[in-house]
Length: 558
Ligand code: GLN
Image (cartoon, rainbow, N blue to C red; front, side, top):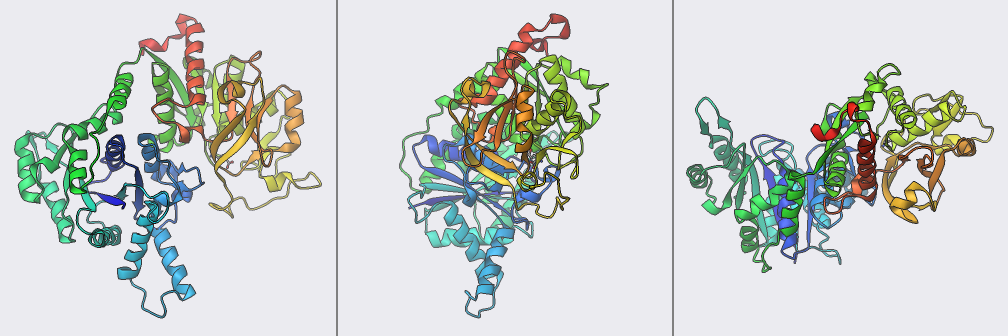
């Protein structure tokens, strides 16, 4: 039977509920249990696919092509189970499903209400995420409820999991509440009042937490833990101190030392061997003791919010660990890059242009790709970064001076990047279309496989077949591929089904390491072995650093 742990949050957001949930999952997994994680998002958007990365951070893409909350990225980096569409749902999806049932007449004329119809729907979605009733059912499903207790919009979720806990019966579910214990400098004290209040709020709706994860900028002393325990009715051993740590990969160890996994297993009557954290300790040691530093310029648009590139940042760091290097990422706003300013990239060991949407800042990204190609600086272009590399090559090497993507210039004369429907136009002319009419609808999403050309740089990394996840609409236009090839661009991977361009690169006789990929390899990176593409990119950056004259500054001193 699948058991559940419900993780709620109090006081303020951004305390790291996703990391805490993932860490608990990792601890249970290390005890030999089959575990999964589910994220419940209280907003009305059906999925985060159409939400701005400035507001919402990265959109994480699963193998089965769901556009999900970035917490699912943490989940996949912390546990072995892979996430699917069912592992993340929103209020929007719940209502959509309830309203569809209502229209079909499934409710047999009853008045459709938040309780029980919406709350039942939520319970069904939670059970589906845990694989209940299928061969994929897990031992423990950890369901993280987005938002903070006290928000109007998360109420139906809390009510639903309270009911689900009742229905599951005693010892089949546990509640973990993440709270904040601020340190007030003027008083020189840690304050427990917000925690008292948030737990009161939770108990008001009938939920008594089994454990409190108390976030603070420091370790919470026993006196304060005792006070929290008394006021919240959580036994002292369930009041767990979660201080700031220098790497997120320390969190499983911090929780384990205070017995969180033991407490949960006791409550759920799960008999399992003790947690084994050897590989986590090794990982933390690798993060904290790098042999050198490598400096990467990330040229993008959403540079103000590092959450926009969460998986990418992590993938670079994982590859750093693999190469025993600390990865120092400088975010460069592509709107500031012009032919006059682009030489600033010379101080970096490699250039990366990440994915993105829309015209803003694109010319700066093209400048960055040009600089990297001409100066022989290692370059990795991801999705849009591959498209700008292709446009740059077309303009400055293949003689297609007006090359562009129809995303930025719908009626441009040389659409080297375009929607498939556009490059299929028989007479060769590009018809104007409404580029925004199908937001969220026509993306190439999820995992797809491609054949890799033997002898290419991509082949040395991936071997014969590459399978990675996608999230984009535009493709390299097949009408220009011969011309690009003739000018020296290597198209080193094509999708197996539709022969779409997956990887472009420069021959290693021309450039030491230059590659653009149409997919998002960052979604498949884990801290354990890094990801082969990022490992190779960071290695190329270190090689470039070693070969540069010392006057240009070596990253090791940074
Ligand atoms: N805007 C581009 C497209 O839709 C690239 C998308 C991306 O980088 N994820 O094809």
